[in-house]
View 1 (cartoon, one colour):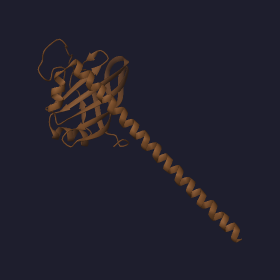
View 2 (cartoon, rainbow, N blue to C red):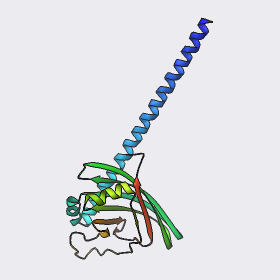
View 3 (cartoon, rainbow, N blue to C red):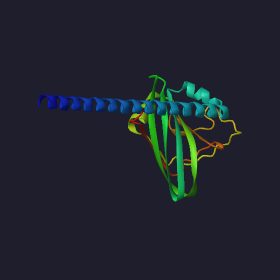
View 4 (cartoon, one colour):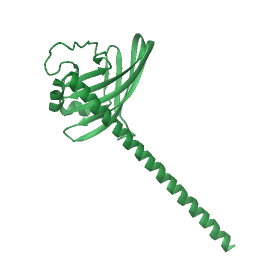
Length: 195
């Protein structure tokens, strides 16, 4: 009887040890996935900024003077009257010296058909607007449409559109720098998995 109890206790301890090791492996894999996802977003941000600076060298000065900026990658589709998209990005809070990982979703109404990938760079002149963007799940919608003309001179913010006072947006497509905010509603929010 005593031997069978010892065997049962040993089996239970072995099971507990196995479950503990399995949980540790799952946590390590999850941590590895988080690290890889963050690295991928940082790489996307660097590539996007390099493209923007090549197209609009003045954007480098604008971002250097700003309190912070955000870079997002988005993939959207539109079929007949409705469209939508989703993306991920990273906010660089220069004053606090930290990164905040975020997500975005958008809905769009209006006639059309197609698939589009694009990158966004948001520039925040002041900390108040940056914090509101990060903490309040900022929304953009109905700003109208603006076509960028690459050959024209337009000061430091050439190629950007003012989303609100002190917040500027650059949108990069495969064809260059463009703005198409007509009828879009976009929601930005913190990525709970990566922060």
